[in-house]
Length: 193
Image (cartoon, rainbow, N blue to C red; front, side, top):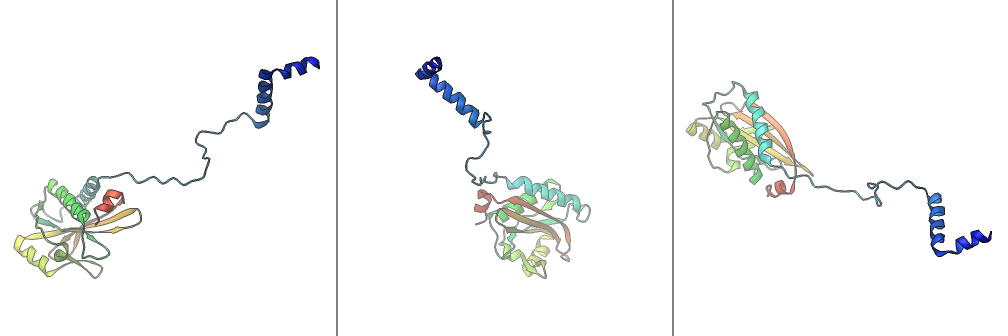
């Protein structure tokens, strides 16, 4: 008993005894590094995306769908995509999407004419679909436009939803259409103003 008391009396050995005794009581399995100490939701912003490839891919689908419904020599007029909520307002994003999709039609061999007009002069909403305004009918006669590339978009909390249509000017028939969406990143939100 005297030897144990002398051994425990030494300062260095007391620390060893305590760590062994406490280590056995607590357990030896450490917590994983990924274990959250506080339950806090982590919000990661959506990665920035370039709308160009998304719009081009949508145009590619429309071109494939179009087939021989529109001859390559027939002229397409792109109109700025409009806000679904008002149909009287576009945005830099609406104009960019129209131009990027029109560029893809041009690359596929279609004739695309560029006329700078305000979006509300070209298209209006009627009977649940796009209809050509009187001014657009005059443009069709003047420039021999066979179809209008039109579209609209809706912004939600964290996504933007786009509908694009290629409309025959003669009778308003939709020759090709596509729907697509993109995450509503800070850059795209800034382009909606």
